Amino acid sequence: MMRTFEGCWPALLTPYTPQDDVNVEVLRALVDHLLARGVSGFYVCGSTGEGPLQTVQERILVTETVLDQVAGRVPVIVHVGAAALKDARRLAEHARSAGAAGVSSILPPVLYDAHGIVPFFEAIAAAAAELPFLSYLFGSSRDAAALMRDLGHIPNLAGTKYTGPNMYEMNQLVRFRSNGWTVFSGMDEQAALARMYGAAGCIGSTLNIMPGVYREIYASLAAGDAPRALDLQQRANRVTGLLLDMGFAAALREALRVLGFDCGRPRLPNVPAAEAQLAALRAGLHEAGFAELAAL
Image (cartoon, rainbow, N blue to C red):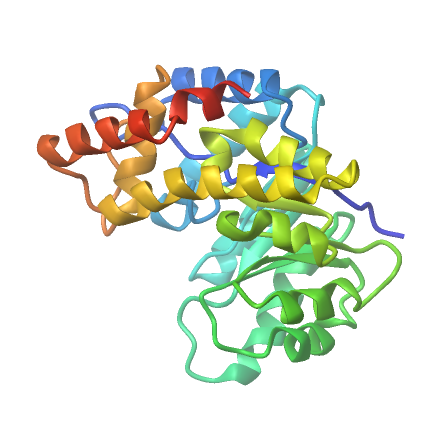
């Protein structure tokens, strides 16, 4: 039976230096900060971590840095999806040898024929056959439950990260298997609802800046206090809305800068923001009670 996972995980952001190299020092500090806030694990080199915008060697560096800094304290799942299948397989093999707890992949980013999805995932999963493999379902109009049925024969298929608003569809994924199965929700704005619909955990971008909110949402639901969970969700969503309004990739980095982590500029096609926008964001975060949420 494949290992299962649970809890609140940051979709870890990758910091860069002013020269646009991976900032290893800040990455280590961010990992320690998030561990001190009680995160359950890390999901590295995904869309928030800009893995698809990095070279293979940079992704290997990020993976090795995070695994070294975590030192076994929590599990680490490595996103290995890439446009080139050879790169994805190499990254999966590296994640296995480096000590990752699991691997994950987006759908093929260049897709002309839907029949290519299953063999694409088969090849990646086979490259790290000893590890749990989780599909990453994001930004697709495809029937997620039907796709999971198509993938069900993959021996190490262990679940999915589902980043979508359809809680009925997500619950179908939860019910797909009863053992050795993990469904993470990936839409931060619906973490409470996803938990109510059976998600084992959440993996999200805003867990880089306020992971304690989501931990408290889960704790409130476990205690039967749904009103508190929904209140916390709405407070977190106010912050998330500010980030989305400004341009999420740049805004998330500015929110981390407010917390003392200079993560540099996002990589194109994620665009940086003007100083006037950043100043407006900082004011909005203050008004939204961001400091209190980040301190949880």
